[in-house]
Image (cartoon, rainbow over all chains, first blue to last red):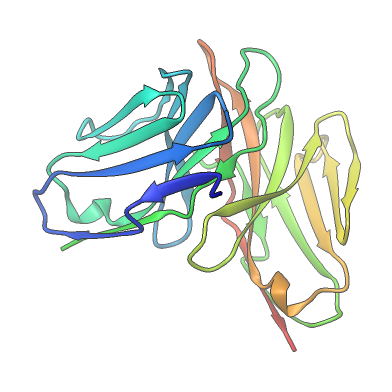
Length: 117
Length: 114
């Protein structure tokens, strides 16, 4: 019954490897997000998709590539992992996002703790 | 750049006491939201206050918003040990070309002791 789920929960890997994190939401939401939370708990948005279309693309290295096969899924692929990529990555979803008006409540997944050795 | 900053960074109180956390932001907003994060977990939405609202209540939570000072406060009354968590404010910003995003503050770590 999990609303927003992510896999894996923990990911430990060597520098230079390529890895993916998967996210699924069963809330019927139109918009999904990826956030990165660093060791100081600072949470920063990376990407946002609305109905499979990329709408927010913050300044992140192009080693990070999101993919949305359908509006219930948003995966994050990371190439050539670096030590600085170690963080907790959160997926989130919300009902809608509009050109004018405000951002809806976001529902977060449990997070994926990525450790790059 | 980071939108919200919270104060204090950490707060330790006794069960039954009230806890107040403050959030300041820099630009105009449509709404401000408060989230809680328990250790090792994702964020959970607590309350949303729109820019034309000044105060909002939800159970033991009371949020105020002062758009002239670009600040908000979260008050938790009669705190419980289970309230121990990090609390984040988040503000939205309309993106050019479509899409809104939340910008999170630095968070306040609340510890409620028995």
